[in-house]
Length: 94
Image 1: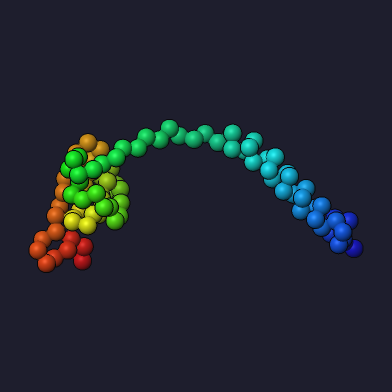
Image 2: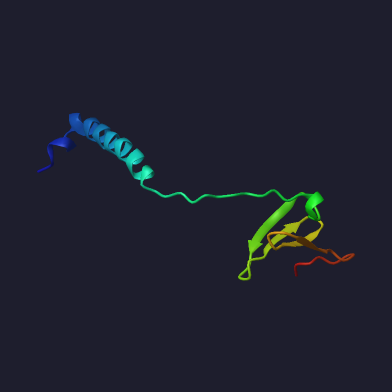
Protein backbone atom coordinates (compact mmCIF):
# COMPACT_ATOMS: atom_id res chain seq x y z
CA UNK A 1 0.00 0.00 0.00
CA UNK A 2 1.28 3.45 -0.89
CA UNK A 3 1.88 6.32 1.45
CA UNK A 4 -0.87 8.98 1.61
CA UNK A 5 1.40 11.55 -0.03
CA UNK A 6 1.75 9.39 -3.13
CA UNK A 7 -1.93 9.37 -3.95
CA UNK A 8 -2.79 11.31 -7.08
CA UNK A 9 -4.18 14.38 -5.37
CA UNK A 10 -1.33 14.80 -2.88
CA UNK A 11 1.74 14.41 -5.11
CA UNK A 12 1.92 18.17 -5.70
CA UNK A 13 1.73 18.74 -1.93
CA UNK A 14 4.62 16.33 -1.37
CA UNK A 15 6.77 18.11 -3.96
CA UNK A 16 5.83 21.52 -2.55
CA UNK A 17 6.82 20.49 0.99
CA UNK A 18 10.09 19.08 -0.30
CA UNK A 19 10.97 22.34 -2.09
CA UNK A 20 10.04 24.41 0.97
CA UNK A 21 12.31 22.23 3.14
CA UNK A 22 15.21 22.59 0.69
CA UNK A 23 14.76 26.36 0.39
CA UNK A 24 14.64 26.77 4.17
CA UNK A 25 17.70 24.56 4.70
CA UNK A 26 19.88 26.19 2.00
CA UNK A 27 20.62 29.55 3.73
CA UNK A 28 21.45 27.76 6.97
CA UNK A 29 23.90 25.42 5.27
CA UNK A 30 25.58 28.21 3.26
CA UNK A 31 26.16 30.32 6.36
CA UNK A 32 28.07 27.42 7.94
CA UNK A 33 30.55 27.27 5.06
CA UNK A 34 33.81 29.11 5.67
CA UNK A 35 34.75 30.80 2.40
CA UNK A 36 38.46 31.61 2.10
CA UNK A 37 39.62 35.13 1.39
CA UNK A 38 40.55 35.10 -2.28
CA UNK A 39 42.68 37.72 -3.96
CA UNK A 40 43.07 38.12 -7.69
CA UNK A 41 45.75 39.87 -9.67
CA UNK A 42 45.49 40.92 -13.30
CA UNK A 43 48.57 40.41 -15.46
CA UNK A 44 48.83 42.33 -18.73
CA UNK A 45 51.40 43.08 -21.41
CA UNK A 46 52.73 45.94 -19.28
CA UNK A 47 53.62 43.35 -16.60
CA UNK A 48 55.60 41.29 -19.13
CA UNK A 49 52.92 38.98 -20.52
CA UNK A 50 53.64 38.09 -24.15
CA UNK A 51 50.00 38.53 -25.23
CA UNK A 52 46.75 39.51 -23.50
CA UNK A 53 44.91 36.54 -25.03
CA UNK A 54 45.52 33.55 -22.75
CA UNK A 55 44.46 30.14 -24.07
CA UNK A 56 45.41 27.96 -21.10
CA UNK A 57 46.56 28.23 -17.49
CA UNK A 58 48.48 25.60 -15.50
CA UNK A 59 50.06 25.68 -12.03
CA UNK A 60 52.95 23.26 -11.46
CA UNK A 61 54.27 21.60 -8.28
CA UNK A 62 56.88 24.31 -7.72
CA UNK A 63 54.27 27.08 -7.62
CA UNK A 64 54.86 28.54 -11.07
CA UNK A 65 51.79 29.55 -13.06
CA UNK A 66 52.19 28.81 -16.76
CA UNK A 67 50.14 30.85 -19.21
CA UNK A 68 49.80 29.69 -22.80
CA UNK A 69 49.16 32.72 -24.99
CA UNK A 70 48.82 33.16 -28.74
CA UNK A 71 52.45 34.22 -29.11
CA UNK A 72 54.18 31.90 -26.67
CA UNK A 73 54.40 30.46 -23.20
CA UNK A 74 54.76 32.63 -20.09
CA UNK A 75 55.86 31.61 -16.60
CA UNK A 76 54.57 33.66 -13.67
CA UNK A 77 56.21 33.18 -10.26
CA UNK A 78 53.91 35.53 -8.34
CA UNK A 79 56.03 38.60 -9.01
CA UNK A 80 57.71 38.40 -12.42
CA UNK A 81 56.71 37.05 -15.82
CA UNK A 82 59.21 35.24 -18.05
CA UNK A 83 58.21 34.71 -21.68
CA UNK A 84 59.19 31.83 -23.95
CA UNK A 85 58.28 32.91 -27.47
CA UNK A 86 57.52 30.68 -30.43
CA UNK A 87 60.32 30.00 -32.85
CA UNK A 88 59.72 30.65 -36.54
CA UNK A 89 57.64 27.83 -37.97
CA UNK A 90 57.69 25.81 -34.73
CA UNK A 91 55.33 25.84 -31.81
CA UNK A 92 56.22 25.23 -28.19
CA UNK A 93 53.86 22.31 -27.72
CA UNK A 94 54.51 19.06 -29.65
